[in-house]
Image (tube, rainbow, N blue to C red; front, side, top):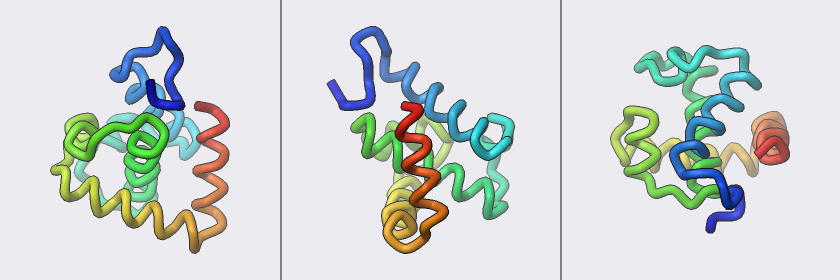
Length: 103
C-alpha cells in the first residue's frame, strides 16, 4: 500500500482528496483545476497534484492524466517541472511540505 493511503481509503478517494486539498490551499474551484486554462496559478496547482499523486500515492502518469483530463506526457512534463521547482523554488517547496502534512 502506498505510504499516503490508509487501509480504508481507495485510490480514487486519494485522488479526490489531493485535488480537494490543492484547491482549498490555492482557493481554486475544482472546475478551474480540471479546466484546460493555462493560467500560471492553475498550472502550478496541477503540477502539485501530479507530483503528490505520483510521489505520495504511487500513481502512474496515465492514471494521473485520466484524473486530470491530461495526456500522460503532459503529466510527465508537469511532474518533472514540480521536481525541479521543489529543488529551486522555496515557495513551491513549502506548498508541497504543507500539503504532504495534510495527506
